Image 1: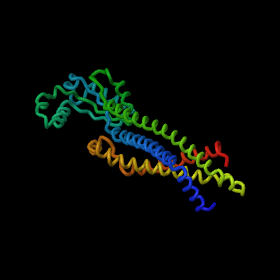
Image 2: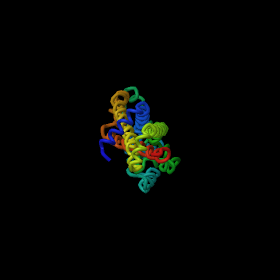
Image 3: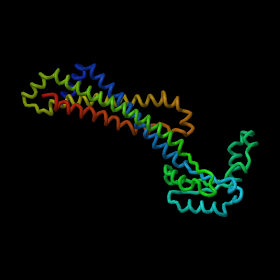
Image 4: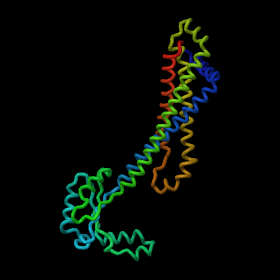
Length: 300
């Protein structure tokens, strides 16, 4: 089949069904834009897990009496806790902090707040074990093992806040993807309708082609190319929308948070990563919808 003929047929199809083609492109763009946003949020969540996972630790605070009586952790029950931690296969590193060391850290942390330095005393602080795990999400194992043990006042970790943060991000991602799937269904229906209308308006031409020996595939190809082209254009608009959202909204609204390192930046690598995915989905969605429609509903 000549390439010029196919291009002409595709352009004629766009011209004859311009309003429906525009509607399909915009619906596809919105759907893929939402899907791309969900994928970017999922990638950010994974990056945050990697960044914060290395910082999450479990802290075992000793009782005030134990902290004062055995400041260097040379007797039981402090040594028993240390041995149990060393024997735990979930534990990566252990760092013991005495009352004196905790007070020094307190003074450094609140060096610019004299009122807090005045009320702080070494006796008010507890000695503690700072425990880093191979898998930070298994902090509950340490809490269950040492909570209520002799010499232990409490077991604390930093994962509760991160769990809430990740739950929020996952909820936003899931909601975005659900909306994107609904939009994708609407795009599928529009593609199907567009193909049916295009085939109906050119039924005389295709009938003549079949009478002179053209194969079914040859008569279907222009319609499929129309749909795929519209899908790719929609994907391109979705990518442009994501780029615009990054520079016009994300960088301005969340710039300070990103620069402080709390949230990872949506850099060019992320946009490059998501772009071919959206193009492939847009083209594949259009091709499958057009092919199924032509096979089931259109007689060429």
